[in-house]
Length: 420
Image (cartoon, rainbow, N blue to C red; front, top):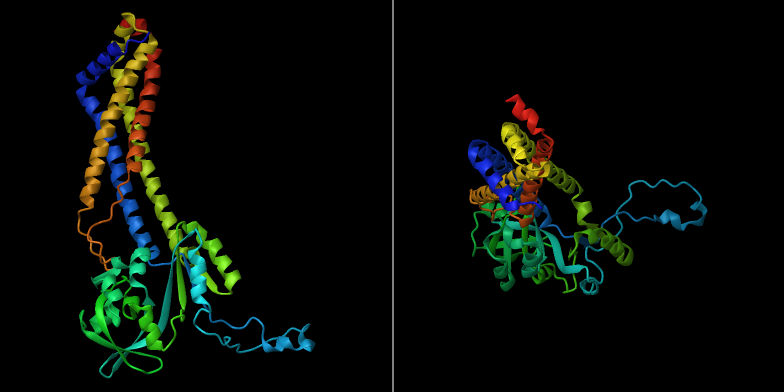
């Protein structure tokens, strides 16, 4: 029967008598795990920030009326040309309205879908921002501000003012930061806008919007849905776009196809709209985890080399232990215990150092126009990373201790003593 108390006492004595080698082995684990935790928290945090930059503002399914040429041209109405090859030049888009027909019933239908988290109507129109005799072209989007903030994190891009202020101001406007800078406007000022029809409407500035894309911020502004409908002289059922947010983003593709077939509308899913960005995200994640795994493997080899040397330095001790009655299995357990103690201590210290460095990075100032509300470097501290790091520390030290200790188990004490 194995006497664990004796084995652990001998393992502790070995570790303390060679404190330099023990410290080196433990530090190898510590810095390997610490570097892994720091890197994976920082890089996944950055990846998450870049994903949010696009995904927060992009609906999972965007529904609208596509202006496109008619699939069937008038020539197809004549029976004598049915079997002929017809070439039609200068095809014009078919006469269609920008508004979505039966938008309100469609919204109600989508809200009843269990996969749908939220459905938001929008009214988009082109306008001019008027400053004296100067007219600047731009876009005005009518939204439900509170819902936009809840589902699409709009508040992260409002640098002054709030979504609540826009919701509560009947003739309010959330102005793009680029337009405000060009026209030297401030919150509380009034700006005149004019739709294509030519009428002029004064709106009160309740805040500034900054998406981080300069070209967009120089033309884009937001107001309430009802305000845009009033400006355009349209009824309450005038909706040009419907944005859908899902519980599971993977349902976006099948839902978009279903909507197109059922309602004869254009429905663009988020994966189609951001195909290039998604490819970039996949590559960044691949690099992150490849580098992280490499760090852990390098740390594992370092631990193995140190423990291997430790065992060769303990040849005399192994011979004495075997000569005094310890079996090969007992010797193996002694060195395995040493390895696991080094792994445990080094792993705990590594997790502490990784957490400390990640927390420190999260306090470093980071200013970017792309995300105006972000003030420090993004760090993603997740318990799963710490579980993986500690598990690898124990697993790598187990393997690093097992292979050399297997050799120690087979050492012949007579040959060692005779050699001395």
